Amino acid sequence: MIKVRGLRKNFGPKVAVAGVSFEVKKGEVLGFLGPNGAGKSTTMRMVTGYIPPTDGTVTIDGKDIASDEIAAKSKIGYLPEAAPLYEDMTVEGFLHFCAEMRGVAASEIDEAVDKAIKTCFLEKVRQQSVDTLSKGFRHRTCLAQAIIHDPEVLILDEPTDGLDPNQKHEVRSLIKRMGKEKAIIFSTHILEEVEAVCSRAIIIDRGKVIADGTPDELKAKSSNAGSVTLKASGLEGKTIRKELEKLSEVKNVETIDSDGDSIHCKISAAKGKTDKLSGAVFRLCKEKALNVAELSSDPGRLDELFREITKSDRED
Ligand SMILES: Nc1ncnc2c1ncn2[C@@H]1O[C@H](COP(=O)(O)OP(=O)(O)OP(=O)(O)O)[C@@H](O)[C@H]1O
Ligand SMILES: [Mg+2]
Image (cartoon, rainbow, N blue to C red):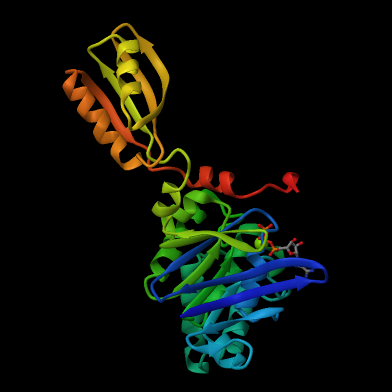
Protein backbone atom coordinates (compact mmCIF):
# COMPACT_ATOMS: atom_id res chain seq x y z
CA MET A 1 0.00 0.00 0.00
CA ILE A 2 2.84 2.40 0.86
CA LYS A 3 6.13 2.07 -1.02
CA VAL A 4 9.00 4.37 -0.18
CA ARG A 5 12.25 4.19 -2.12
CA GLY A 6 15.47 6.07 -1.45
CA LEU A 7 13.80 9.06 0.14
CA ARG A 8 16.10 12.02 0.85
CA LYS A 9 15.55 15.53 2.07
CA ASN A 10 18.12 18.24 2.34
CA PHE A 11 17.35 21.58 3.95
CA GLY A 12 20.20 23.64 2.54
CA PRO A 13 23.38 21.94 3.72
CA LYS A 14 21.45 19.94 6.36
CA VAL A 15 20.58 16.35 5.45
CA ALA A 16 17.35 15.60 7.34
CA VAL A 17 16.54 12.30 5.60
CA ALA A 18 19.40 10.37 4.03
CA GLY A 19 17.92 7.61 1.86
CA VAL A 20 15.00 5.88 3.57
CA SER A 21 13.19 2.89 2.02
CA PHE A 22 10.38 0.75 3.40
CA GLU A 23 6.98 -0.71 2.56
CA VAL A 24 3.75 -0.97 4.49
CA LYS A 25 1.06 -3.44 3.48
CA LYS A 26 -2.64 -3.29 4.20
CA GLY A 27 -3.21 -4.72 7.66
CA GLU A 28 0.16 -3.50 8.93
CA VAL A 29 0.91 -0.88 11.55
CA LEU A 30 4.46 0.40 11.18
CA GLY A 31 5.98 2.23 14.14
CA PHE A 32 8.49 5.02 13.52
CA LEU A 33 11.00 5.41 16.31
CA GLY A 34 14.02 7.61 16.64
CA PRO A 35 15.58 10.38 18.69
CA ASN A 36 14.45 14.00 18.37
CA GLY A 37 15.56 15.39 15.03
CA ALA A 38 16.09 11.92 13.50
CA GLY A 39 13.94 12.71 10.45
CA LYS A 40 10.66 10.98 11.33
CA SER A 41 8.35 13.94 10.74
CA THR A 42 10.24 14.99 7.62
CA THR A 43 9.85 11.45 6.21
CA MET A 44 6.14 11.49 7.03
CA ARG A 45 5.70 14.89 5.39
CA MET A 46 7.25 13.51 2.21
CA VAL A 47 5.18 10.31 2.32
CA THR A 48 2.00 12.41 2.48
CA GLY A 49 3.16 14.69 -0.32
CA TYR A 50 3.15 17.67 2.05
CA ILE A 51 6.73 18.54 1.10
CA PRO A 52 8.63 17.31 -1.98
CA PRO A 53 11.63 15.02 -1.50
CA THR A 54 15.10 16.01 -2.67
CA ASP A 55 15.33 12.52 -4.10
CA GLY A 56 13.41 9.24 -4.02
CA THR A 57 9.86 8.11 -4.68
CA VAL A 58 6.66 7.42 -2.76
CA THR A 59 3.74 5.46 -4.12
CA ILE A 60 0.41 4.98 -2.38
CA ASP A 61 -1.50 1.97 -3.69
CA GLY A 62 0.56 2.21 -6.87
CA LYS A 63 -0.07 5.95 -7.35
CA ASP A 64 2.99 8.17 -7.36
CA ILE A 65 2.67 10.98 -4.82
CA ALA A 66 4.47 13.41 -7.15
CA SER A 67 3.07 12.59 -10.60
CA ASP A 68 -0.37 11.30 -9.56
CA GLU A 69 -0.78 13.59 -6.60
CA ILE A 70 -4.55 13.85 -6.31
CA ALA A 71 -5.21 10.11 -6.60
CA ALA A 72 -2.45 9.28 -4.11
CA LYS A 73 -3.37 11.98 -1.59
CA SER A 74 -7.06 11.03 -1.61
CA LYS A 75 -6.11 7.70 -0.07
CA ILE A 76 -4.22 9.28 2.84
CA GLY A 77 -5.27 10.57 6.23
CA TYR A 78 -2.55 12.62 7.91
CA LEU A 79 -2.13 13.79 11.46
CA PRO A 80 0.79 16.23 11.33
CA GLU A 81 3.04 17.06 14.25
CA ALA A 82 1.65 20.56 14.63
CA ALA A 83 -1.73 20.44 13.00
CA PRO A 84 -3.30 23.63 11.74
CA LEU A 85 -6.83 24.10 13.03
CA TYR A 86 -9.35 26.76 12.09
CA GLU A 87 -9.58 28.46 15.43
CA ASP A 88 -12.94 30.15 15.10
CA MET A 89 -14.85 27.03 14.00
CA THR A 90 -16.61 24.61 16.31
CA VAL A 91 -15.27 21.06 16.39
CA GLU A 92 -18.30 19.89 14.44
CA GLY A 93 -18.01 22.75 11.93
CA PHE A 94 -14.33 22.09 11.41
CA LEU A 95 -14.87 18.38 10.79
CA HIS A 96 -17.74 19.18 8.45
CA PHE A 97 -15.41 21.45 6.50
CA CYS A 98 -12.67 18.77 6.43
CA ALA A 99 -15.13 16.14 5.18
CA GLU A 100 -16.11 18.45 2.34
CA MET A 101 -12.47 19.18 1.51
CA ARG A 102 -11.66 15.47 1.49
CA GLY A 103 -14.42 14.80 -1.02
CA VAL A 104 -16.92 12.98 1.18
CA ALA A 105 -20.28 12.94 -0.68
CA ALA A 106 -22.66 15.65 0.61
CA SER A 107 -25.25 13.08 1.68
CA GLU A 108 -22.67 11.24 3.79
CA ILE A 109 -21.00 14.16 5.51
CA ASP A 110 -23.19 14.26 8.64
CA GLU A 111 -22.68 10.56 9.19
CA ALA A 112 -18.90 10.84 8.65
CA VAL A 113 -18.68 13.72 11.14
CA ASP A 114 -20.73 11.82 13.75
CA LYS A 115 -18.55 8.76 13.31
CA ALA A 116 -15.28 10.67 13.64
CA ILE A 117 -16.59 12.53 16.71
CA LYS A 118 -17.57 9.26 18.33
CA THR A 119 -14.36 7.47 17.38
CA CYS A 120 -12.17 10.25 18.78
CA PHE A 121 -14.32 10.84 21.89
CA LEU A 122 -15.22 14.40 21.03
CA GLU A 123 -18.93 14.36 21.98
CA LYS A 124 -18.33 16.61 24.98
CA VAL A 125 -16.71 19.38 22.92
CA ARG A 126 -18.69 18.99 19.73
CA GLN A 127 -20.08 22.53 19.82
CA GLN A 128 -17.02 24.12 21.42
CA SER A 129 -14.90 26.53 19.44
CA VAL A 130 -11.55 25.04 18.42
CA ASP A 131 -9.50 27.86 19.97
CA THR A 132 -10.87 27.08 23.45
CA LEU A 133 -10.01 23.36 23.40
CA SER A 134 -7.49 21.86 25.81
CA LYS A 135 -4.36 20.34 24.24
CA GLY A 136 -5.61 16.76 24.35
CA PHE A 137 -8.94 17.67 22.75
CA ARG A 138 -7.21 19.71 20.06
CA HIS A 139 -5.07 16.72 19.31
CA ARG A 140 -8.08 14.43 19.12
CA THR A 141 -9.82 16.89 16.80
CA CYS A 142 -6.79 16.66 14.52
CA LEU A 143 -6.96 12.89 14.66
CA ALA A 144 -10.67 13.08 13.74
CA GLN A 145 -9.86 15.14 10.62
CA ALA A 146 -7.28 12.53 9.60
CA ILE A 147 -9.85 9.72 9.60
CA ILE A 148 -12.91 11.68 8.46
CA HIS A 149 -12.88 10.27 4.90
CA ASP A 150 -12.08 6.71 6.07
CA PRO A 151 -8.75 6.61 4.19
CA GLU A 152 -6.91 3.41 3.35
CA VAL A 153 -3.60 4.88 4.50
CA LEU A 154 -3.01 6.70 7.77
CA ILE A 155 0.11 8.65 8.61
CA LEU A 156 0.02 9.71 12.24
CA ASP A 157 2.81 11.83 13.68
CA GLU A 158 2.88 11.19 17.45
CA PRO A 159 -0.87 10.51 17.72
CA THR A 160 -0.80 9.94 21.48
CA ASP A 161 1.38 12.92 22.36
CA GLY A 162 -0.24 15.06 25.05
CA LEU A 163 -3.12 12.68 25.74
CA ASP A 164 -4.02 11.56 29.24
CA PRO A 165 -3.38 7.88 30.10
CA ASN A 166 -6.98 6.85 29.43
CA GLN A 167 -7.01 8.53 26.05
CA LYS A 168 -3.59 7.14 25.18
CA HIS A 169 -5.02 3.71 25.79
CA GLU A 170 -8.13 4.46 23.71
CA VAL A 171 -6.13 5.87 20.80
CA ARG A 172 -3.78 2.87 20.83
CA SER A 173 -6.76 0.51 20.68
CA LEU A 174 -8.19 2.60 17.88
CA ILE A 175 -4.97 2.44 15.85
CA LYS A 176 -4.74 -1.29 16.41
CA ARG A 177 -8.33 -1.78 15.32
CA MET A 178 -7.98 0.43 12.23
CA GLY A 179 -4.68 -1.28 11.42
CA LYS A 180 -6.53 -4.47 10.52
CA GLU A 181 -7.97 -2.83 7.39
CA LYS A 182 -5.60 0.01 6.66
CA ALA A 183 -1.90 0.61 6.20
CA ILE A 184 -0.74 2.79 9.07
CA ILE A 185 2.51 4.55 9.92
CA PHE A 186 2.77 6.24 13.27
CA SER A 187 5.62 7.82 15.12
CA THR A 188 6.05 7.74 18.86
CA HIS A 189 8.57 8.16 21.64
CA ILE A 190 6.67 5.74 23.86
CA LEU A 191 8.29 2.39 23.32
CA GLU A 192 5.59 0.35 25.08
CA GLU A 193 3.24 1.74 22.49
CA VAL A 194 5.23 0.04 19.78
CA GLU A 195 4.92 -3.32 21.49
CA ALA A 196 1.20 -2.79 22.10
CA VAL A 197 0.24 -1.61 18.63
CA CYS A 198 2.79 -2.20 15.88
CA SER A 199 3.22 -5.22 13.69
CA ARG A 200 6.59 -3.80 12.64
CA ALA A 201 8.81 -0.94 13.64
CA ILE A 202 11.73 0.94 12.17
CA ILE A 203 14.23 2.97 14.11
CA ILE A 204 15.51 6.07 12.34
CA ASP A 205 18.63 7.92 13.40
CA ARG A 206 20.20 10.85 11.60
CA GLY A 207 17.98 10.36 8.60
CA LYS A 208 18.73 6.64 8.13
CA VAL A 209 16.88 3.43 9.00
CA ILE A 210 19.11 1.66 11.51
CA ALA A 211 16.77 -1.17 12.55
CA ASP A 212 13.70 -2.78 11.02
CA GLY A 213 11.68 -5.70 12.36
CA THR A 214 8.79 -6.90 14.48
CA PRO A 215 8.87 -5.64 18.07
CA ASP A 216 10.03 -9.10 19.20
CA GLU A 217 12.81 -9.21 16.61
CA LEU A 218 14.01 -5.77 17.66
CA LYS A 219 13.91 -6.65 21.37
CA ALA A 220 15.95 -9.76 20.66
CA LYS A 221 18.72 -7.52 19.28
CA SER A 222 19.21 -5.71 22.58
CA SER A 223 22.29 -6.76 24.51
CA ASN A 224 20.40 -8.22 27.44
CA ALA A 225 18.23 -10.45 25.25
CA GLY A 226 18.69 -14.14 25.95
CA SER A 227 20.26 -13.70 29.38
CA VAL A 228 18.85 -16.11 31.95
CA THR A 229 17.69 -15.35 35.48
CA LEU A 230 18.02 -18.22 37.91
CA LYS A 231 16.81 -18.64 41.48
CA ALA A 232 17.94 -21.99 42.83
CA SER A 233 18.86 -23.69 46.08
CA GLY A 234 20.27 -27.05 47.22
CA LEU A 235 23.99 -26.26 47.10
CA GLU A 236 26.02 -23.39 48.44
CA GLY A 237 25.45 -20.25 46.35
CA LYS A 238 29.07 -19.90 45.38
CA THR A 239 29.27 -23.58 44.37
CA ILE A 240 26.26 -23.14 42.09
CA ARG A 241 27.93 -20.08 40.62
CA LYS A 242 31.18 -21.95 39.97
CA GLU A 243 29.29 -24.79 38.28
CA LEU A 244 27.46 -22.30 36.08
CA GLU A 245 30.69 -20.58 35.13
CA LYS A 246 32.11 -23.87 33.93
CA LEU A 247 29.43 -24.20 31.24
CA SER A 248 30.70 -23.36 27.76
CA GLU A 249 27.39 -21.56 27.04
CA VAL A 250 27.97 -19.11 29.91
CA LYS A 251 29.89 -15.88 29.53
CA ASN A 252 29.25 -14.33 32.89
CA VAL A 253 27.28 -14.89 36.10
CA GLU A 254 26.14 -11.83 38.00
CA THR A 255 24.97 -12.60 41.53
CA ILE A 256 21.88 -10.64 42.53
CA ASP A 257 21.54 -12.33 45.91
CA SER A 258 23.16 -15.32 47.56
CA ASP A 259 22.75 -16.63 51.05
CA GLY A 260 23.88 -20.03 52.37
CA ASP A 261 22.53 -22.68 50.05
CA SER A 262 20.79 -20.53 47.44
CA ILE A 263 21.53 -18.14 44.62
CA HIS A 264 19.62 -15.56 42.62
CA CYS A 265 21.67 -14.59 39.61
CA LYS A 266 21.66 -13.30 36.06
CA ILE A 267 23.57 -15.37 33.52
CA SER A 268 24.71 -13.99 30.18
CA ALA A 269 25.41 -16.15 27.17
CA ALA A 270 28.78 -16.76 25.54
CA LYS A 271 29.02 -15.45 21.97
CA GLY A 272 26.71 -17.33 19.61
CA LYS A 273 25.27 -19.46 22.44
CA THR A 274 22.21 -17.39 23.33
CA ASP A 275 19.66 -19.99 22.24
CA LYS A 276 21.50 -22.80 24.05
CA LEU A 277 21.90 -21.00 27.37
CA SER A 278 18.63 -21.74 29.19
CA GLY A 279 18.77 -25.42 28.16
CA ALA A 280 22.31 -25.75 29.50
CA VAL A 281 21.38 -24.07 32.80
CA PHE A 282 18.31 -26.26 33.11
CA ARG A 283 20.36 -29.44 32.57
CA LEU A 284 22.90 -28.37 35.17
CA CYS A 285 20.16 -27.75 37.74
CA LYS A 286 18.75 -31.17 37.06
CA GLU A 287 22.14 -32.87 37.24
CA LYS A 288 22.94 -31.22 40.59
CA ALA A 289 19.39 -31.88 41.87
CA LEU A 290 18.86 -28.19 42.64
CA ASN A 291 15.48 -26.78 43.63
CA VAL A 292 14.64 -24.22 40.98
CA ALA A 293 12.33 -21.37 42.03
CA GLU A 294 12.85 -19.36 38.83
CA LEU A 295 14.49 -19.97 35.49
CA SER A 296 13.56 -17.40 32.87
CA SER A 297 15.04 -16.08 29.68
CA ASP A 298 15.03 -12.31 29.01
CA PRO A 299 13.25 -11.45 25.72
CA GLY A 300 15.21 -8.18 25.56
CA ARG A 301 13.99 -4.62 25.72
CA LEU A 302 13.21 -2.06 23.07
CA ASP A 303 14.38 0.87 25.20
CA GLU A 304 17.71 -0.86 25.66
CA LEU A 305 18.14 -1.43 21.93
CA PHE A 306 17.11 2.17 21.29
CA ARG A 307 19.77 3.48 23.66
CA GLU A 308 22.37 1.08 22.32
CA ILE A 309 22.00 1.92 18.64
CA THR A 310 20.93 5.56 18.49
CA LYS A 311 23.33 8.36 19.20
CA SER A 312 22.32 11.20 21.42
CA ASP A 313 22.95 14.76 20.27
CA ARG A 314 25.68 15.12 22.87
CA GLU A 315 27.82 12.64 20.96
CA ASP A 316 28.00 14.88 17.89
N1 LIG B 1 11.82 23.19 7.28
C1 LIG B 1 13.01 22.87 7.79
N2 LIG B 1 14.10 23.61 7.56
C2 LIG B 1 15.31 23.27 8.05
N3 LIG B 1 15.55 22.16 8.79
C3 LIG B 1 14.49 21.38 9.05
C4 LIG B 1 13.17 21.67 8.58
N4 LIG B 1 12.34 20.70 9.01
C5 LIG B 1 13.11 19.84 9.70
N5 LIG B 1 14.40 20.23 9.73
C6 LIG B 1 15.52 19.53 10.39
O1 LIG B 1 15.52 18.19 9.94
C7 LIG B 1 15.88 17.31 10.99
C8 LIG B 1 14.81 16.25 11.17
O2 LIG B 1 13.66 16.85 11.73
P1 LIG B 1 12.31 16.05 11.99
O3 LIG B 1 11.29 17.04 12.39
O4 LIG B 1 12.02 15.22 10.82
O5 LIG B 1 12.73 15.14 13.22
P2 LIG B 1 11.85 14.11 14.08
O6 LIG B 1 12.49 12.78 13.95
O7 LIG B 1 10.43 14.23 13.69
O8 LIG B 1 12.10 14.64 15.56
P3 LIG B 1 11.10 14.75 16.82
O9 LIG B 1 11.18 13.46 17.52
O10 LIG B 1 11.73 15.85 17.63
O11 LIG B 1 9.73 15.09 16.33
C9 LIG B 1 16.10 18.19 12.21
O12 LIG B 1 17.45 18.44 12.34
C10 LIG B 1 15.34 19.45 11.88
O13 LIG B 1 15.89 20.57 12.53
MG1 LIG C 1 8.77 14.79 14.68
